[in-house]
Image 1 (cartoon, rainbow, N blue to C red):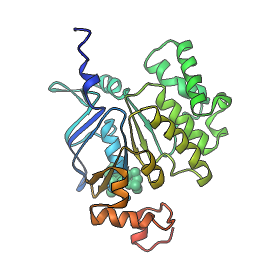
Image 2: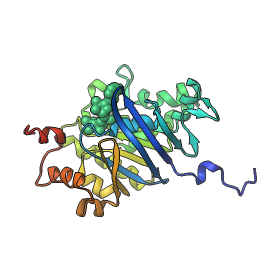
Image 3: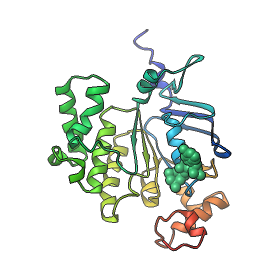
Image 4: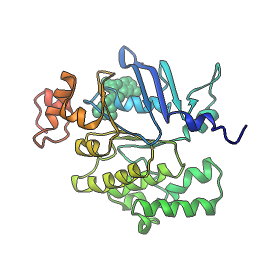
Length: 276
Ligand SMILES: Nc1ncnc2c1ncn2[C@@H]1O[C@H](COP(=O)(O)OP(=O)(O)OP(=O)(O)O)[C@@H](O)[C@H]1O
Ligand SMILES: [Mg+2]
């Protein structure tokens, strides 16, 4: 290839979803979802409980296979190679461009913090251990955990666990980081330290899709807000526009719940009259 010609992956958006649909039995959970995320963009996905946010993230990294539509990460289609389905091995390689941070951390309990961060680069990517160790130490410094590197997950606070999980997700040098409510299992005092690390990543230009109920954080760091309702993207807008002038009745109802210092209780509980 001509060295001056950038590869397709460099020019492609970090993520392109086209017409993604997913049902579980009779329940139609994602309905024709299309979304493009440019490199370096931070997209915050908001919406009431059950609207399909986690399913959307799980379809992006093919933990769930969509029934219809395409998912393209850095120019490469997930799940299919030409007319063929990807083998498990091909899928694992395609997934290695995507880092995922879950609500409940999902750290390996029998490995130390440092071993958790080194696990995928050494054992999945077969990279040189000493180089991986050096990078892992840098990542732990970045998330403020260098002194906890030899601790096991059970010896950490929730905020420390989540910061370790973020370091682990970064260790595979992903093109795209997905977060599914990374702070909703944390005590309120620990939320800030995790959001602080994520704000740092946003400043470093890492492409992120973040499902969150932290409205002030979303407003501050998002390039764009995606508001989901009943399996569809009901609204996509710049944060100021979304929060100040939501365009749909569903978004207005959702935001009303978060005003006046309301807690992040799932909206369906509020609808059912259950106090947070
Ligand atoms: N594996 C599954 N099997 C059957 N139904 C599922 C499955 N996963 C999700 N669902 C259903 O799909 C709908 C959307 O779920 P999803 O977890 O994507 O919602 P969500 O927006 O992430 O909600 P929350 O804010 O509570 O996390 C729900 O009705 C859920 O019960
Ligand atoms: Mg969810």
